[in-house]
Amino acid sequence: MRHFDFLSEADGRRLFFRPPQPFSATDDLSVLGMALGATLYSPATRPALVADLAKRVSQGVLSTVICLEDSIPDEAVAAAERNVIAQLRAYAESGAQRPLVFIRVRSASQIPMIVAGLGEQASILAGFVLPKFTDENGAPFLDAIREASVTTGHRLLAMPVLEAPTVIFAESRTEVLLQVRQLLDKYREHVVAVRIGATDLSSSFGLRRSRDLTIYDVRVVADVIADVVNIFARADETGFAVTGAVWEYFSGTERMFKPQLREAPFIEHSERALRAELIARDLDGLIREVALDKANGLTGKTVIHPSHVAAVHALSVVTHEEYCDARDVLGTRSGGGVSSSAYGNKMNESKPHSAWARRTVLRAAVFGVANPDISFVDLLGAGLHQ
Image: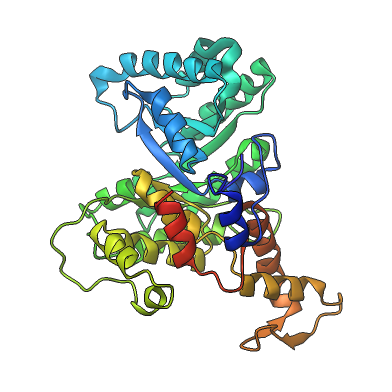
């Protein structure tokens, strides 16, 4: 798999100073956690799942979750299980390019059942998403994944979702998060990322953010995100990748506030029409939220519509300026020191900036480095209109 693989050779040269590098499901977890990018959710009841997967991969979706949980009515679960097994077997047998496929299960018992149903095609699975994960209910899920990995001879990955009420309630949050981290440490070889279930967390207070706001404007959820990053995303060997909350909107309606995209970058790149299209699709809010995700230490994002993928991936590409700064920081002698950036607009300190620089170089390997004159506007246009 390789991000932006749908680009022509000429477009690749035009856009990238260093192109994205290929990765696979067998790579190190640090690489895979970064490579998830926009993770597209789909209900397991979709009758054309095989065709959908093939189409989305060709459009740049390399991480997908097939949901057997909240998106499926209780009475449809058995049919959804049969459908997902049949569809994934067919996809595996088709020989089409495989994305990272995860299944969001309701119970730990579904894990061995699905793996057994897939049989010799179980390698189509990258792993499982574990809903409403806490220290009290998490071990059976993780044990089932570990056992299924042994059974198949194929490492299966886990993505626990932090969305239970005890995660958002102030009196229990810190203790629960610390206990979850202790549990995940025991299964570290299977945990590719920790996901934040903003929809369920908001529901504990009867809240739902509008398309005019980001999740960081919903203070009770923003506080959870800060604590999750604090406990799970530390820049040392104890950290995990933590992904951004879902963006729920995909069609334009009447707006209360002004669009959140400045005109200047689009004018400079002769893309006024692209800005208008993004606003019409409500993608300006998503773009702002992804920028805030990055600023707060989150990697990738849960999305529910294919139109979201291009925005997440365009903002995941490392700018030429970021890359130069990271290389400067990492190239400084071990004793530390400070220097002016190659772009002459900031200070680079080797010791405090080294963790950021290592993370940036990892992101550059997975998503590439843009050419000096290329902005997110160019990358977004290429992804949205391919």
